[in-house]
Length: 296
Image: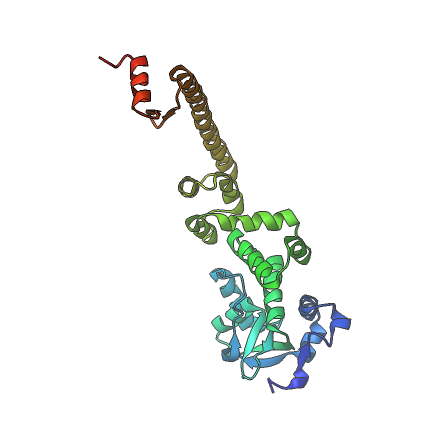
């Protein structure tokens, strides 16, 4: 039967054979036809619940159709892997969501399955790491997967980098795109822009209006990554020129304030196209008016 304890495999029992954790266990199950044959059993597709930690949200329709045709012709060669949900007749999908979807398209009601015992944390860890390593996630999905692992597993960027065989800077830089405006992130999520396109836009933070504007132009005008980088440089040059002009203007106004203050022997402030001359009392005011030749 599907819930027969002897047909399940625990993450602890086979650590000495397959490795230190659920990733090693599942990877080796998928690589071992003999283990699959010994443990695989038919489970109703209606009893299998998708993994909520699966970072891949969109699957290629054509690829699913091709796989479903293959399943119709040759059957499902590699079983999916699930974990029994405690105190229920249902199973949590761990590995093989693409195969499950294709089997449903093929019209199957049951599917070859290997059942293992795993905690929610182990399931989440495997789903995220396995998909990061094996699936061509877009930059948004990859960044979200990294963030979930860092938040849920309390890993540092260095620890996560070792787990997924990436460099620490890659982890940090990928997660930084989550700081972009939501409108730009949606374009990445929808595969309208790549990581290469949006990463340079971070240099314009916190000017979100300009970031969104350039992102839309990059998509609509089909900019290359190099074009985006060049446009960022242009914007930075314009910004630097404006800052230089403001700085030069500020230097001039500050010098003018000092000279007027010395000339009038009082505090003078020049700002926002206004000149403010301070005085202490009516006598001081009359003194200033005399200096400025404003008394009759």
